[in-house]
Image 1 (cartoon, rainbow, N blue to C red):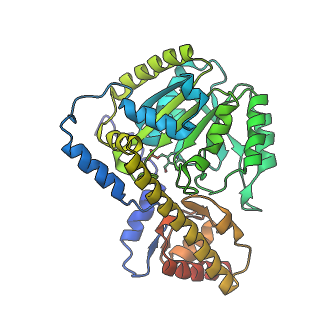
Image 2 (tube, rainbow, N blue to C red):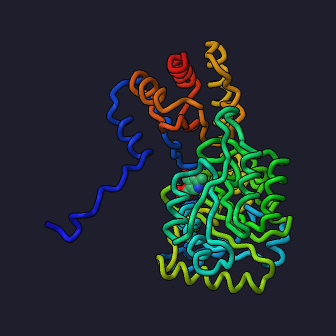
Image 3 (tube, protein in one colour):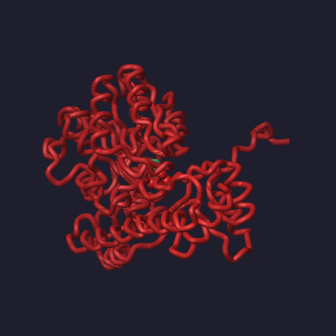
Length: 396
Ligand code: PLP
């Protein structure tokens, strides 16, 4: 017997389970719509070649805050070139282990130093890891209404009601763009309403930006929500990931920014972020952050990245059009405009668990999460037709 014999089996990761089931399916038409399709960008290869040839590159430890040019570049990417936050030195930006690690460092910082209510409001639904990350840092979590199944859109009234009824001074997690898993984002006017609600209730916004540039193909457009809050003078937190928009998944390149009211506070915040990092993993990995820094600081590489990113975003938008058209062609019962209206890598089809399990997957070999979410990145014009036929079969 083992000291650990009472350790219960942890629940399996849903997405990994889908990939395994897909790999075991020998049907040539099988389709994996579980997660994204990692692809190495040309500009990333180019940046890596430059790094290899650079005699100044070594394997020395980074400081706790990571690559300085990466941190500066990340903050500029999110807040914009002329951001008053950056000009006034009101941001403490540190490198984190991609989006997840940046959220976690932010959560640990809040657990140690946030004088407000240590409860994080998370949209319902949200990326499954949000709850786990905040709770692992000792913060409480609660949900606010976000998605409305009836319209397959935003439950704007419910959202405002829930934020209005939240404990004063609680933390609210906001997806900056391309909400995962629903693909439903607030409009600009709705963001303005959310900002008012956040301000009225004295909530602390914590933005999760995992898809900047991936949603619309426009880096500035996808950061509009963050900039709106920053320009309104709010203090906030921001976790950024370069997993999707630079395809750096396994390199774990991300950043955490804490925006404070003045530069003096910001410097002290940064010193504490470093202390949090020191106790968790001392310092972050170099390679991914050096790639990002190279791309963000070289005008030519930056231009090439923007073009490749736009290509990825446009491809996803065009798959939405293909799938929407294929469903309309078939006269599939129900409304499917949400397929085209939703934003980013994922689409919430509205299919039920039973339709997904019994029909899409069991009968048609389409692998996707049981909540009806599909990754648009896993589709091609041909497979859109196949998927439309399978959806048609499921809903009739
Ligand atoms: N936040 C959201 C909403 C996500 O969808 C993801 C990835 O799927 C992440 C954060 C973090 O990903 P990573 O840690 O790979 O950057």
